[in-house]
Length: 276
Ligand code: SAM
Image (cartoon, rainbow, N blue to C red; front, top):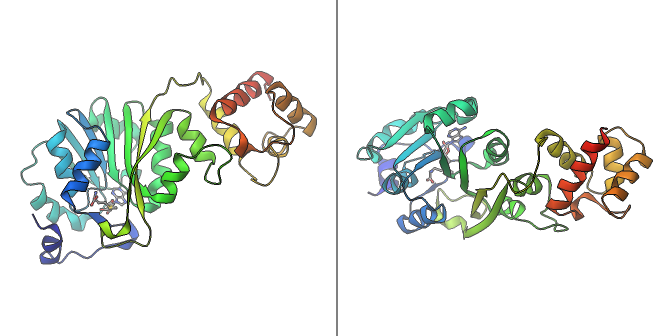
């Protein structure tokens, strides 16, 4: 099926606000499906677009739940997904759905596979990290810079709060780089497929909210030392913040971005035990 022609024939007008940059290359779509390790099971797709990825997912999964915000794509999807009986299409804004309702539609464990709009990247990832119970992996086509941030190592300029938040509960791997020419219409940036495989037992973190606060506070002012950030973020004295670092065996001059993920877990546990 020539989807570009179909979109033209149906008079479809791309909506920039929704981050509509579609993928049409069949080989690439199959590769993304392999990157996501889809073989049976349920897949949740966010942003079906013209249904190109949805069709490939439909062939490889038992069931696909696909959200699409743009009502104008409904008639296009009616054509492209006409023979995909295992696809449940939801026309609506995924961000307006509560996570338990999204998970109820999936009905058990599921993978997320999506070429997501740029404006949604961080909030969407953090929703699945923080709120989802049954998700096993996220395989996302995102801006290349975002993929590099998610997979970054300590002391790298890309390493930040989102890196630590995700890597604390998942293993992250960049699967492939997608040059901008592969999208229709062509965006101004290159993209990458990043695979986030959840492993929530990686670390013992009973107080996830405190762990997240510890990470957020540690990166709040990148040019300040960790001692300063902890003192401001937790409203404690510099001396108390220094004692926490000593208990973690960390140099008093270090910055948040120098800590590995296990060191952040240790820092959070010491803060928890200090009951500050
Ligand atoms: N999956 C298609 C593909 O790969 O060609 C489309 C990808 S396009 C980058 C992102 C899609 O997400 C667009 O079709 C857009 O309308 C849709 N979208 C944007 N925001 C959304 C939201 N909040 N909820 C559901 N879909 C959304």
